[in-house]
Image (tube, rainbow, N blue to C red; front, side):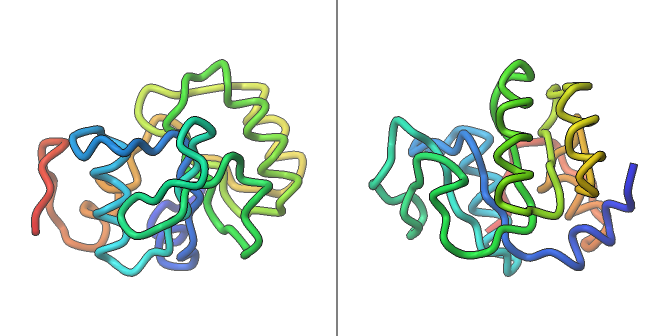
Length: 144
């Protein structure tokens, strides 16, 4: 696996797939947290397309985002990861990041063949805390 600290230092735009308008959902908590620490987050959720969450317009799919995306951060079931990996290649993202509990060997193979970094079964918020704030916190506590 690539150096997570380097990924989170170098890349500052994240397409978050599966973000919800529910403020208690893990994806929403992670989005708010990453925004707080200077990341530009593009929420992606086909069911909420056109709505706003935490000040950002929600996109139907990552290929609809006009700006460059560095990290595709996935809060969807493992069996959806391959299709997301294909879109990750299409938009030329740098990293496919699958959240806790999400793994997909086919997606991993596809992105690696396209020189895209792959992270699985890790939480961006928890990794950021561990590497930059030197804290390990029970999820999903959000410090204000």
